[in-house]
Structure formats: structure tokens, C-alpha cells
Length: 198
Image 1 (cartoon, rainbow, N blue to C red):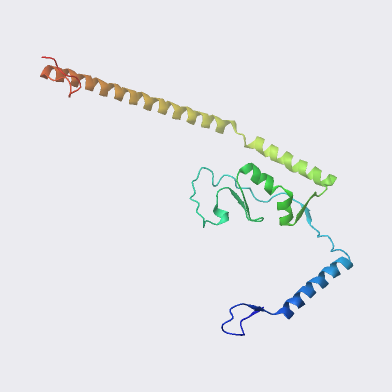
Image 2 (tube, rainbow, N blue to C red):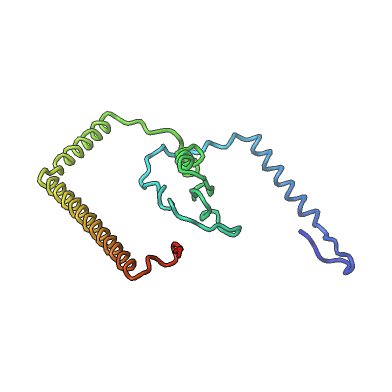
């Protein structure tokens, strides 16, 4: 590398030419070996599979973040992909990126999907059928009627509260009018709102 030995008044770096020549020769030999030999075998990637986690698009929704020059890229505005180390500005582009070829390659997957067999399809249909049956069993008429009654009671209580509030406002207005009448009897009708002509 750079050697600092030599004359004290000479501040220029002195490079070890032999060492760099060896490094260049090694690099040339490696490149020749790649060209002469067979090409490197293609990387075997696993087949595409569905995500086992939920994509978080709403955690930062409606929040304000102060961004400075020193803010790390992962905390900048937008959606951060920690696999590809990039920031995407909106949710649609983030979903496109996650489902895209570059992201899947970084995860170690190809864009090919495993071909399903007939047995796998039949099992999937059975599982979906069971889910539908469970949903139908969960629907309970009595429980639904109870919920509707509770909603009606809440609506009635809300209406009563509104009516009470209107009555209070009307009483306050009435009291205010009586105060005006009393002020007129005493000889002053307002506090400098209108001038009297004598």
C-alpha cells in the first residue's frame, strides 16, 4: 500500500508497485478461469409461496414525523422494505414492490408457483367448506336481536340527551330576555351597544 518511509520533506505517498501488480495479475487470472471454464451453475431458488405474515400498511397512517438529514432511511416518510433496503412513497407501489421480482429474488424465491395436485385442491375445498359451515353456525338469531335492542336503547338515550340540551338552551335564552327587560326598567338597556339621543 502506501509507504511513509523516505525523505521527511517529501510528503507524497509512495505506492508499493509490486503488491498492486500481484493483485492485478490475480484478478486477470480469475477472469480467465471464468471465461475458459464452464459458466457458474444457476442459483437454485425455491418456489413462490404465500406470505405467513400480514403486511402493515396502516401503522403510520395519519401520523406526523419530523424528518431531518440524519434520520435513518428506515424512519423516513413512506414504506421501508428491510429486505431490499429501499423506501417506497405510497402503499400501492409498496405492494407492487413486495410482490415484484426483485423483492422475491432477495428473499431467495423464484417467480414460479408450485403446481397443485388434485388431492391438495380437494383438501382446500373441504377446509373452505368447513369454514363456511362454522360461520353459519356462529350466526345466532337471539344474539343478533339483543344487539339490535341495545343499539335502539343507545339511540333513544342519545335523542333524550339532545332534547334535554335544547330545553336547557331555551331556558337560558328566556332568562337572558328577562334580564333585558329588567335592565330596561332600571334605565339602561345595554352596555354601550347603542347611543341614546337626548
